[in-house]
Amino acid sequence: MKRIGVVLGMAFILAMGVGAQEAPVSSPMVMVTNPGGFPVQLLMRWIHVLTAVVLAGGVVFMRFVLMPAAKATLDDAAHQRLRGAIIPKWRKIVHTGILLFLISGLYNYLFVTRFKHADSMYHMMFGIKFLLALVVFVLAVLLTSQKGYAERFRANAPFWMGVLVTVAVVVVLLGGYMKVMN
Image (tube, rainbow, N blue to C red):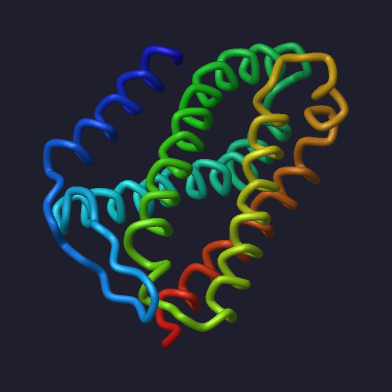
């Protein structure tokens, strides 16, 4: 996992440096350089959206398909073995997805959308969306953690996964609203 983070971080820095070109974004107060220009903007948007599709789809599948099916067909020992086989693999996907969300979201906000919206309403919505996304990240980490402090969340996983799905849907809806704001 550390290697993936290092590689992605280096790729991000390289993409920003190698593709850096003067692509000023106008604002009443600031002119900024958009690192990487359009290709990096597009790549970061794709990463952000595809990460949301993979993670949200995975959680919805696990909560509403896999968990009920496993509960209905497996005894407790088999259910625990299945959980033990799935969670470590899913944890890697979740941690990588959170890293990709943070990198792509920070890039999109700092270099693309921040200067296109002078109104404070957009920035307030961004703050709310970011805080709700942090709730999603914390719940996702807790539900995939094998640490003792996360046991009470894993013990009531259907409830907490329902909360996670609900908050994630609100984040997606806010993002869609923000995308069409003037």
